Length: 410
Image (cartoon, rainbow, N blue to C red):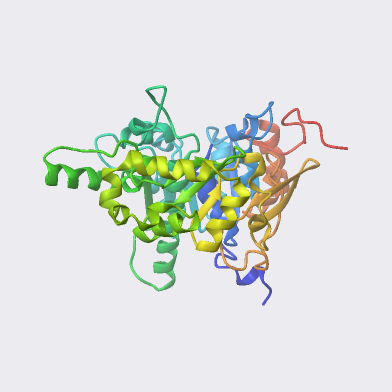
């Protein structure tokens, strides 16, 4: 048995009807686990194909390598009929269509179940069942509705975090649900083949620690008391500037961490028992923050690194994006995948797993729009002349290498 056929999802066919991030991210993980992922796109393509100077963005390159692309107009009768042929050959479908769009395109769970009763049907939507189930939502909407954005302010204005973490969490939760369903199927257990993930509900779950924490404070103190800022809930746990103006992020969660830090930096506070307990350090937050700030600011980054590492204190440098992949840790086997695209080369971080460097997942470049339309439709039972007719009518599209203006590197 070769490495590729031993992958957890080897032999599974997953159809992705995804735009932007949540569903494509879920399908990316399934691909990294060995599934054949077919990305079905409309004639205009996934919007992430045209976000950077008319061409693909980092989102598309990072999360669509390894996939195949079929381009169909699902609003046309012929395009929809071709899609149902494909659906009958699939093990799973993951999509993030708006509920109204899913109904309009006849791609609800009930519609798809008639075509393929064994299909694992996964819908990532704005809101799961409830009074808002038809409302639209995006990553920032989930942040706003679940308390994250209110705490993250720029110049006083509630602002999104930046990275679309809620989309990616939702995609990961979708994979967990799909794998659980597949496991139950394999064990012959009765189970619903329906997996439904809401961005809003994802946001609630991610925020559950803070939502429960505010309830706890309210019941203990009679009011919803908050820490001044999440960054400084524990003095010494944050970013501090070294003498040579490099930012160092310190991990100081426990009393032992505080003591190790003070000893490593040879501070007199190591002997100050009044600061040995977190409760007391919180009471003297400003003093403790000043102690740490002065200690780190008095030495270079390399000096601080040597002293803290020797003492077993957790820390890292706060890195800009352009330097992140310079770290030796990032270049250990199985951490990055070399992906080529139109003559450009990219180091793409892997879905983290043991054996990623030897499990046989193929390195396929991000597909051109419609690159596999004929191949996949014919594997689903359509004859070559039927594929020709679909392309001629505009119900399907095949790649011609001119879908965006980047010139290939010569």
